Image 1 (cartoon, helix red, strand yellow):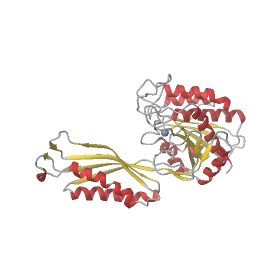
Image 2 (cartoon, protein in one colour):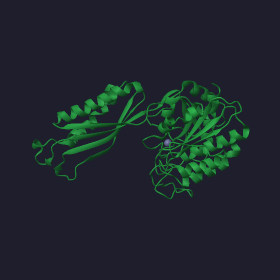
Image 3 (cartoon, protein in one colour):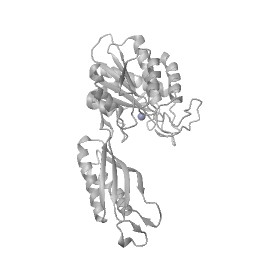
Image 4 (tube, helix red, strand yellow):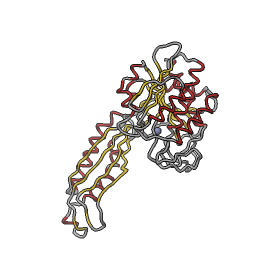
Length: 376
Ligand SMILES: [Zn+2]
């Protein structure tokens, strides 16, 4: 595999310099398919591609998944191969694609027993999710896939650490919008009004009790508001106020409880302020649940890989549409450490730039996942 890394890193730079938005990834897919050198494959989920690499033993295939899309972020890394557009590979998908190419090219060269389906997945960053559409397309069943393997770079893990944890590793996500309707008017006569901003503010604070008082703290929940919209002037109370947020859970069984509590808090709090409220829910990702057998076998393979330290428990309330594969077949998502130095840019940051050595680490993680799937 080491001999494939220089060309893969070169490819990473090319993909990074020329990013494509979610749903517009044809050019990136074509670049990667050409680098794979194993045929055109089939189109999936509109702008994605799946390329089958045959195995000597036949049987079910192992899918190795990488994401194609970039983010609407203006890059500030200062490298020579930085994106010049208003898009950026700020989530490491360029690294994942390059690693997938290195693994697949070596697999073809040395010959592997189980077939590999190289899955170039579009639209990881947006809804409707690319993974959901890949599963719906039937391509996994068509190619007799019985395991899907993925690896994502993770700045919160130390460089050289690869995590393969069994069970839930990423949260489910539901996005929601709360609209509070009140009675606006002159800011100096609050007793004549029904202030939707005050009611909404109380909703935002009370929603924190959802995690602390409704969901078993062993499993946890996160309810974060990312956007608030209301009013136009300091001395005018508006008629409406809205907030947009996401509800994240680690256990599918908590979802109904959490959604009921969310509705109760929103309606009850609005009513207590003499207002009414609307609540709109948009389901996004389910819980990403790693197959325990795949995770433990991958840990053993990773432990035998030079320059890798194995972690067995990293999980976060981030979300990844890889979760849809875990619902369709056995899935394993690993996390590859980039370093935990203070002030290191997070995923989706305009300065986020994994070192090129991450390509080799992600490739080794994918190989460990393949071997784990091959054993069972
Ligand atoms: Zn990502």
